[in-house]
Amino acid sequence: MATERTTCFSPSRRRLLQALALCGLLPDALLRPASAAPSSILVSGYYERRGTQMDNRLRWRHPNGTARNELALDFRGHGLYPHPAKPSHVVVFARRPGRRLVEVDLATARITHDVSATPGRHFFGHGVFSADGSRLYTTENDYEAGRGMIGVRNGTTLGLIEEFPSAGIGPHDIRLLSDDQTLVVANGGILTHPDQPRRKLNLHAMRPDLTYLDRRDGRVHERRRLDDHQLSIRHLAVTRDDQVVAVQQYEGSRHRLPPLVMVHRPGQPPRLLRADDATQRRMDWYTASVAADSRSATALVTSPRGNLITLWDIEADRLIRSFDLRKPYGAALAPDGHRYAISCADGALFGMAPDGSDLRRLQATDDGAWDNHLMWIGSGR
Image (cartoon, rainbow, N blue to C red):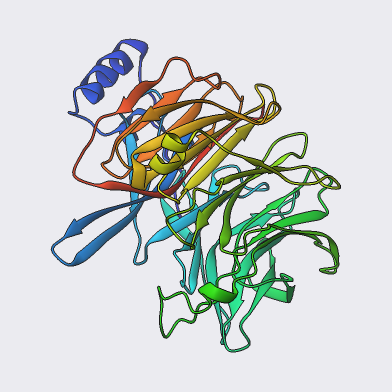
């Protein structure tokens, strides 16, 4: 039988240990019981290259401190989502075309569930829980039929219960609106097959769309297609008042500078947000992540190929400003809505106010790299 052990320190000894930890002489694990999850943490996939090999991990840390924790993974993590019914747990999805997802308890740095895709399917790297955590919805590929699927999974075991079509090809990101019934899906429109893992098989016949589905039966409520069929919808952010911000990557001619940010409210026409030509060119026809805030009516978008982040006004539909950052990938909004965080492929972390002020470094570069997406979890807004 396991024995529970609680570590207690006097105030003076705790201050000494904190000072030593800040100097890098003690790990943060000595400063709190193993069962105590931090109240606010940044979480992301992380990796180091060792020759031709990848040393994959999940890393989490306090936004304003040096302490961090890691867990080794045997796959490259992509999207993440917190478990609503288990405050210290997150689900990590393998990078497309991955066949794995794991649930991790951050308080104990332990994998609690490890699930593989069913035969004939692979994951697209994203998923979302119902508000009560009883169901997990995953974007998947029925690759022989060339159609997107939404897997409906038990929120406790993560096992597959049923599935329904995503009503498109290549569903990537997926989110849930505030009614707890409507799923919004970024059907990227790009046909892929795991036998040719990174090859895009239908660039001249792509059909991307933003689709709203009923999570109870898969019924389509609304579908929005863009005029340019080679503008692939990739990632989503949903504000508290159900404004959807979708960011794209362009698969067409580099002679064009199409807008890469779309804002949509269900029942209304989509709005495409475009910057000046120089900024659009700097975005390099590619976006990696997006985070959005309803209070400031802003959205933060990362463009790692152009070493650029852009901040958008999603009420006035305009670019507020852009910032030079080396290889920015993940974007996340603090649970209280007061800060954005940005993770970079050189290991650096940055924080910024939602109005674009007070951009500051939270972590210096190191030998590794944060992966594509960043999650900021903690107490509610």
